[in-house]
Image (cartoon, rainbow, N blue to C red):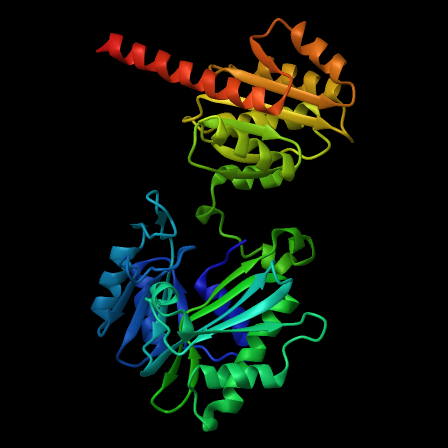
Length: 400
């Protein structure tokens, strides 16, 4: 789960990380009021969306008068920002963060990530922060310092000092740097975050170290014990199907293809999507219904998949271990009868009570395409999809 910049900054401030004074606004008038409360003669108005590279997309405005603050609010609020992270669909800005201008002497980069291959937290830093950090990783990887942290002992002072020196900080800034770096690590550890990024972390002309931007992501599986963090979710920034799926205990991720998938088990789901691609198709989603797929749960999963109007065929792939194929089959038949399906449905069942499950589907009288193996199911799904696309092409041609 991702959160907004202003939320991440509020969290970091609680852990001793220095941030610039700022306030949230939902209208241009509120933005002006925030600027008046902050004082000074320069402010930065930032679009709050779940994406980086906002500056390149025109989502960050430097203002020198209250009129400019108001104009920035009017331009950003309600605007759809498109970055390389949002994809072409973009994300709508419904709130802005007004922040006091900062006298920047130098821009740095600091990040904490879970490195699953090393089974460690990795601290990443560079003396060259800012908007071009991703390009820097490609063109000059030596400029990026990585320090691995052993979870059993946590971040040590010497590691924080080592990173501070790698960032090019002066000896006089060392204590503040260690406090900032350790504060970031504690926030990541204490709140079950899997990513924390400050870009840029800036030094001012007076030597202060300030987190000028902040980004945090949290482990969805830990939100049950992090209620305050879970409440920070902005549902407007998330695919509504993913929100609906989470409310029903389903794992859903929308993709760019047109073959809908309903599968039990994340591993089987990944394998199924690979087989669809090998057969020449593209999956429209990742959907794990889990081990307890009741008729009601199955119907909800069907509706989630079919909510994507771009889906041309649907593949159900179930391996029944804890579950039973006859229960799944009853759920599929129930769902198809309750939903006016206009696309082909391919079902592959395997495991406990598979013969009974296949019998239920065969005797249902519904136009369900059965498959015995995963490879056969993927091939039939791609074939059905291609036939559906050809049929729709004929209809559109005839209408013209």
